[in-house]
Image 1 (cartoon, rainbow, N blue to C red):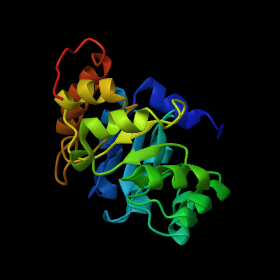
Image 2 (image 1 turned 90 degrees about the horizontal axis):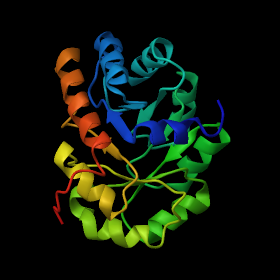
Image 3 (image 1 turned 45 degrees about the vertical axis):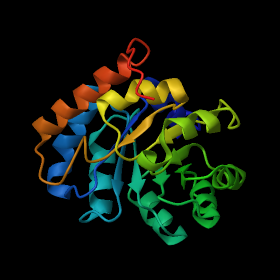
Image 4 (image 1 turned 30 degrees about the vertical axis):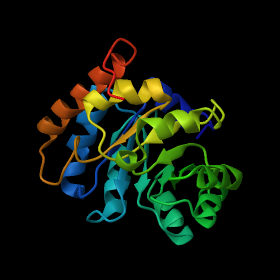
Length: 217
């Protein structure tokens, strides 16, 4: 796939759906609801039931402009499994350079989790495409603002953890480029219709991010 597809997806909608706990038999309608709402990046964490099957189903059933991948990727061996299933982006809770390099060598996009500037720059040196700021609840708005002053503007900063629709505008003003969305979007057992409703609330907040005057600093 072209090198800019992931960046294009994030520019269209900077929201990444994290479907932790989703089952293969329910993932297709959930993915379709997310896509219809405007999401263009979906990840299935590898600690979900049969995650590779879910990734393969999403890749088969969604348009090519929707980037599908795996979260909670912990080893280079898992990178190969994700690629074989059709995954295109490797999302990590940490920034192990061996996993980042394995993703890039496999031709996949890399989104490592980082919590300090040292980790951030080491991840970029290893080949990271974007930086997942995790956990966002702990880092907060002042840290995002400080990082944005030193991380190149071409690198997306993506806070993950505890993000709600009301959080989006303040984080964007602080310098965030997009967000990973977990339990506020999807929890195990939610039906596709409910996930779609949650997704539309987030997309509305994303579209209104520059007009929202909330100063939740």
